Image: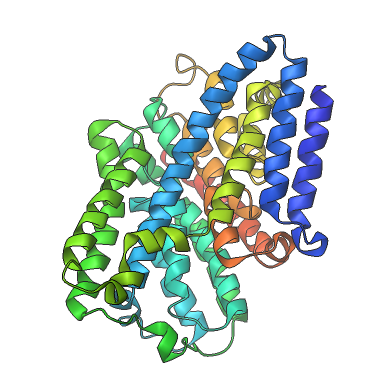
Length: 426
């Protein structure tokens, strides 16, 4: 039965990858895979249906936390966009060449991701690109680079990537040490792909039509206010988590509620026609719910393999067969391009006790880098990639051909940089 679960996952993964030629929406495939895999697991598990149901409830809570976070972030970005708030940034970006714009966007995504997180940063930056570039094919390429930059930027801070956050909360790493140790390798991981891409990227920036690029019915004060409210609300989330130690989605929902209230007060004297497209209720209708549903399906499908012990068993098998910790962590990073890095890192945390591998050991720093950046190699290997896939309708194989090799080069360049740095200073 376990082999059947693996077969269902492989078939679902192939169907998601072949979404465009098959003309079957990936959200449908992900939901079917999740339903079948948990059903098969309930038949085979020695825990019985009741035990599996408890596991499912636990995994559903983890999935719901990510989904609530995603809905909140997407809605805040949509409200900011509907008010023309992103013009605050786009009006200051004066790059005329695509190569120059690529460098600017990559560095903004890298450092923004270290403050927010890689998924939220990707949502913000993809929305921003729609205000800067008219050509959809160019936006696809920029979205791919944004995924690489956001994942690299998220790896070197405790709040930038969920796997780094897990290691931080678990006591495997400390804030100051991980930032000092990983900022240079993470920068190398981002800079090399951008340098290669900018060398081949020719042409000038063509902005969207004026009608599409400007929000109607908003004053400059309203644009500025909603931009800073939106960005402030997103930045508040990691601060809320650090102070209260409550889940990030709660902070995101709190930010969403405050922005909703401010919007209601701001437009309370306008007619329904004037404020219709500016209301948060309209923003909720405009977010891409198909991407949200895909998130639910793919996360629950991967959670099956974590619940039934397949991923922890894989980690244990690698430890026994490979032996070398450096190679094992590199492989974990590569595997995270295929399956969710969260259960992989969770399994690794269980394999290597703190009594044997104390806080800020090589393995934990290296794990934070590899698990955080390895997911960029394939579009569905990270939350940032899945978000970009839904928002810009990126095809799996297009990303694998155009962006994957760049991400792979950056991944290994950062590895070499980290190992050299570690040997020099330890």
